[in-house]
Length: 255
Length: 220
Image (cartoon, rainbow over all chains, first blue to last red):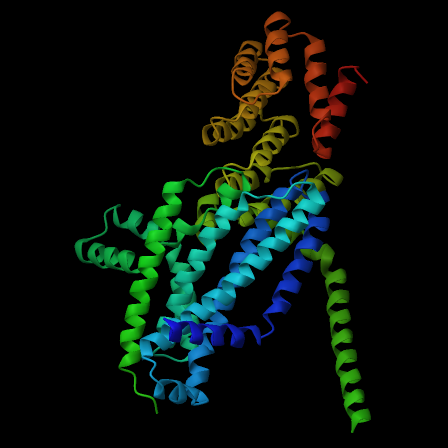
């Protein structure tokens, strides 16, 4: 575990060097401008609009950053041949991957929390009360971020950065359609297509489970049961994806 | 060397600024022609269900964008031809994307009933909102309001005001209107009071309509 954490710390430092603080500054500025500009346009719904855009923007930005930064993270190590120096030490390839995953997840999670803090502060200053209800939705978004980060690490274990970004983006988008797949299958798909679609459904991450933004914006409860289920499902899914990534990476030959 | 770099930097910035200015000038000159196209664009807006799928989990933010576009549409037509044919469609999209967003139901129903003189469509929209938010007394109150001031169906208005006054979290005025409707159904003073309630909302467009109606009733 110590070795995994050391690699995670290193990855966190590497990601921090990519000027992610700039993203925070741009997001903060965007939220301040939006809160001032949208209020008069939204016919009394300015607060709701700013919270909505803030939540959607912060989640989307952190997921896109996880994909963009993560897709080249492993590739860079192989390109610079630093991976040989690390793997020559008593570090297993699975540990190396787990460290990369943890570092990237921690970095993007910190970014998401930073953007949430900015959102809470701007809404409190502009509209009088901080929308504390968003914290439940953000905690689910952190888990969604973990799942997407694990998928990025999986694809980066065997393919190029461009393909990694493409596949991860596709998986993240399809993850929100997973429930609809099952719905369409239930409406009379033929045998083979039904089995194939059901297979895809069980493989895809069920990301709609992590979308509680509408509830948060309207101050509706998310429910402890859903949170607990989302946590367990998320951790199991991340574990499964990392196990597969580790297996692939262990058998990968570096040239 | 440094002077050359500075010159190329300045030239680059100048070129970028000129191109941007040219694009803006082009947009300003083409605006008159583009406007009808923007109106037509609303005709081809897909259904709320489709947009919901396409929003990929960001449906409340998509609802806000559609809401802002709907207000813009209303504002533009209010200043020109006062035709609001697409407002029902836009509010249907907003409320499908975010079924708990109360304002689009209320505002959409208000415009349909008052500006388009289609109270039935307004009531349909509000009743859809009430089904999606069965614990929110404001929907019952707004349905009662439309029954009273647009359809002059006083028993229905009384029923909905009473329902609103029995729901948790209701405002005091819901009880007052429930009592007034039963006592003085069809009374002009009650219509005046109801329109005055609209003046207390934060929606300037609805306030304008309320002032117009109060003027018609001779109350201001």
